[in-house]
Amino acid sequence: MSDHAAPVRKPVHHGTVPNAADVSFYDFKGRWSGIYSWIFSTDHKRIGIMYLALQVGFFLIGMALGFLIRLELIAPGKTIVTAQTYNAIFTMHGVIMVFLFVVPGLSASLGNFLLPIMIGAKDVQFPRVNLFSWWLFLCGAILAVLSFTTGSGPPDTGWTFYAPYSIRTGTNVTMAAMAVFVLGFSSILTGLNFVTTVHRMRAPGMTFFRMPLFVWALYSTAWLQVVATPVIGITLVLIMVERAFGIGVFDPVKGGDPILYQHLFWIYSHPAVYIMILPALGAISDIIAVHTRRTIFGYGFIAMSSVAIALFGSVVWAHHMFVSGQSLVANFVFSLLTMIVAIPSAIKVFNWVATLYKGSIQLETPMLYALAFIFLFMIGGFTGMMLGVLSVDVHVHDTYFVVGHFHYVIFGGLGFSLFGALHHWYPKMFGRMYHQVPSKIAWFLAFVGFNTLYLPMFIMGWEGMPRRYYDYLPEYQTWHVVSTVGSWILIAGLLLMFGNLLRSLKTGKPCHELDPWGGGRTLEWTVPSPPPLENFDTIPHITHGPYDPDVPEHK
Image (cartoon, rainbow, N blue to C red; front, side, top):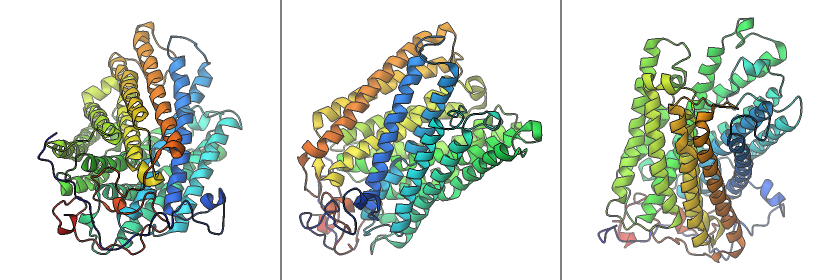
């Protein structure tokens, strides 16, 4: 930290906002009242909060299932459940965490809440489509839950639904696949809405290179949602058709090709990793800019790196298939592309570190999560490059090394950035400040527990422990015990964090300041806390960049 950091200057944008005491979206009385005023509301802020509530609820369910998985693996042999039950729990954990928490991620919840405000709009381009997207998400979630509680038994395929097993198993795979299909439609509609909103609803004077970096990340993500998601929808329809009518698409006994399924699945699912992580990268950029009191270093490079990640991330899917029998030339090409996609990710990290340099760093809870994110994301990125090397991937393919890498990127990336972003924009969203001490204790427990849980997986995987297995050899038990204990620490931190945020809705200190952090320069810090129904009384006119401190009206 340094005394030479850029001085704090409040942004002043042309245009006015209504007084928070006069109209708030919480006090809005329309055609509906009570819970109906939420579930039938087309206000983007309410829809964002409803997404957030569903995501957190399903995250807690997925966390409970993960807790059961770790309990089972604390010792070799049967511990608490049978092998079939373990497979079902394993599948439920993956489907819930990936499709109901990670894929909607920051985009559906905080993105919905903040995107229109950040570009100076009163709402998204298609408010009713936005509400319909949420209803589709709810319907998909209900179908997912029903698939585990009805029919011939919960699916046991894992969240990837790999063929031909997903075609031959007698469990309730069809309903689970239908749930993911419906969730995919929700994702596509949200992406279309965000792309159109960014193109059509920006305030006067807000060019593309005056947009906040979180908006850039949401925009890049939206294109991925629109382009990539239909592929998984078609693939899951083929699974359902093959199960219903016995058509040989993926089953080799009937002339199908299971490798074709892997290609189709990963053509979506690797871009889906960036659907998950890109909004997180954008949120971290904004958190660092506010809590270092500095102009973000290399704004243009960070903005373009989001586009580059979306582009290159769409052409690396077959690095998941190095041992599937594809040609050596294909392996070389996808290995090279995997290395290339690391470049724009590294650009972001270098620019974040440069922004931190000589910044007036305020170690508030959001900044702690941002720093933890950088550390965890770098571990996930470096291990991802290791998996992109052919010789290494052949050795550790389908081992716990991949499990560790996946969770460092997705949970360490998306999870910690979502928690940091939630703390960062919490006073803006709810008009109250959360309790500081419990939030920092929760961060510490989550950070320590996360690393205790997932670091041993790299060691186990390097030593040959296969993933997805119900049982294992005794020589791996020590690391499984360490990992299981880490899960208890992590869960304690997460429960404390969510409990603190929930309690603060009632007992937190009222926060009616426009900018409680004192370093915000983007548009959301110029509207009341919480924002009024249509955000702005008069649409602002933008005359400068989102992080520019050297503007006359800032002084």
